[in-house]
Image 1 (cartoon, rainbow, N blue to C red):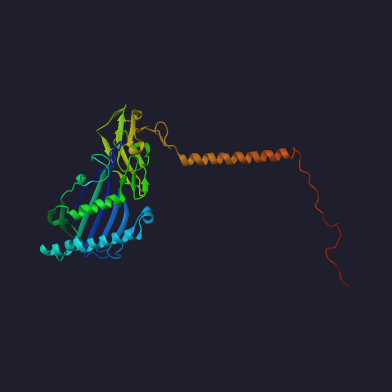
Image 2 (image 1 turned 180 degrees about the vertical axis):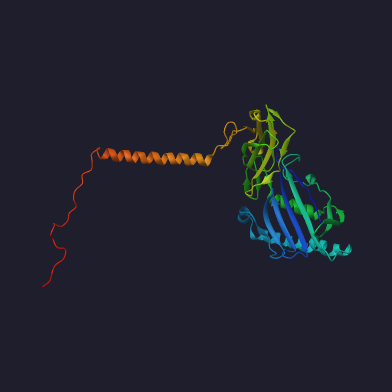
Amino acid sequence: MMWQLLVVSLCGVQLVSAVTHSLRYFHTGFTGVPGFPEFVAVGMVDDEQIDYYDSVTQKDVPKQQWMKDHMDASYWERQTQKRFGWQQGSNKYALEELPKRFNQTDSKHSSHELSSCLRRGQGCPGQGWTGSCLVSAPGELCVTKQDVSALFTVACARQRAVTEDRAECSDLSLTHTQQDSSHLEIGSISLSPERPQVSVFHKDSRSGGTELTCLATGFFPRDILVSWLRDGQELQEDVDSGEVLPNGDGSFQVRKSLRVRAGEEDKYSCRVDHKSLSPGDILMPWGEFRGVGHRGKEVPIIAAVCAVVALAVIAVVAVVLVRRRKSSGGQKPIYRQAAGKEPGDSSSNSSA
């Protein structure tokens, strides 16, 4: 496995809370794997894919609408040339030359390379990016052998990030990330912080008692603090913390759960702290959410809506019937005989 990690700390205007924004490029190569391109490159900004390149199409293409709108054709030509250079350079060396050195030419191999630029809101003096704020970390050059049962390292050789990599990372960072006091700008697009939607719900625990869960979803950026409180005091133990997961629309979600004694649920509340809420936070007592009653009992929303609609229909029908009855004056309807022929009239003429 080949890893080349370039960590960059870029200077910016200081924020109320330090938020790290990232630009990452993943380069992956394969040999002897049917149905897969020999080389794939993917760009990510703050966990959102921005472009894609593979050895089949040999063309770098945008994966975000704002990239299509604000990057011209010359930009994509340059990016395609860079990806092709990676494909023919370090990727080809890792998959063809290094296996020969270790006598592993009869095996399937893959190479993986990561270039990462990080920009923080605090910690660097001055305005914008400066060379003195650039920090590089050693990477690893590895080759992996893959089989059905194992994935293990054949060889690793450490190397330092070279000057060209630093310059490219700096250029990419300035192209994609610009930070000011209120939001992150990617190109000409502003990604403003999105407030989390918080819910607190419960279920009976198998071991007895109640399991409370606090769910925060729909927030951006990714960094968030979610904690459980008992009588206003933060709990550090017996809290099950889930990972922050992407929602698929650019926002994120996370949940935290804990088990409590039945009947003590009202003592607990969930606190959420996020950049979009600065300088305050969200304090959500148990049960205070749409579809959840005061004591955490789930309200059958669909059934309630159906009942309301049914009552409304009945009321409308009743009003219509009452109005019709009033318009008739309460009198019995008068029936008249329909016009017709007198008895004895023939329905057909006879001919001589």
